Amino acid sequence: MKNPFRPTAGATPPELIGREGLLDEFTYGLHLGSGAPGLLTIFTGVRGVGKTVMLGAAEDAALEAGWAVISETATPGFVARIGEHMRRLTQELGEGRAARRVTALSVAGFGITTQLAPEEQVQWRDQAIALLALLAEKGTGLILTVDEIHAANRSELALLAADVQHLIRESLPIGLVFAGLPSAVSDLLNEGVATFLRRADRIDLHAAALDDVERSLRDTLAEGGWTLGPDQAARAAEATGGYPFLIQLVGYYLWKEAEVGPLGDDAVARAVAAARRRHDRTVIEAALASVSPRDREFLEAMAEDPDGISTSGDIGQRIGMRASAVGNYRTRLIDAGLIEAAGHGKLRFAIPGMAEYFRGE
Image (cartoon, rainbow, N blue to C red; front, side):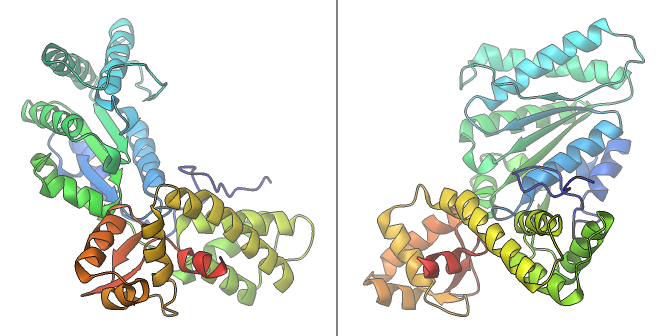
């Protein structure tokens, strides 16, 4: 048996720990069709908590129910790219037999302009209507999934929301599933950019319970013939903090250790250390790549608090920053998904392991 853990962004893990029931409304909506509330869903959460994986799970559920799927990331031009995929799928379905099974289309990097001209916007909607009419005849529909909407151009997002709202009003079978960082998603909805999306089912993803992580690690390793003792499983689970990406990393390196010897304390320690190093490189350092020196100083000041909770006043004193400036940096770092509120005037890191990363530096 090959190593089943996949510590890569968006890769499907061997088990969706702590995510039971999150897609129930969505899958029910696939059976109800147009206008079902579950067909408008937004996944939010910090980096590494599994938003992209949940989008993938929604896509799989849609395909299993016979729906077409178009998957996109909210980089410039994503609405135009969706339109191109709809055009291609319309052509494919129009030439096929009525009983032909619908399959997914994924992004292939089309070089299309980042903005739609007014006449192209009308064409986009007409294309959507033509495709959805074909799908409705086959008793199915279309699911659009859009990742990283915190990076979306506001005008593009507003355009997509307006057109999807129109299609729903026309009783056409369409669903829209988004994913993005919590504060940025809240800002998008509160700004009125896409008021219609406020009615979406918002699912905030959190860390899994450590007991569930322990069980999953032991069961998955057992499938490969490896034994992870209770104490070792507890240490490994604790190192993940319950965050899905870290769970995959720790599980991946535990499996590698098991392939060469017993999973004792030393093997678990090596696996955890390797997982943390890779997490630092691929998640933390990537998240910090665009921060300013002053932002970094703010984060380093937070890392001085051993219990993981910082107050705005303490941070200001440590780095000699006025309260108004502290508030500005606080807002900016929350929007960037690096920190989060932990109560009135209190903050904590949003990415697991970040405090330890700065202390290690």
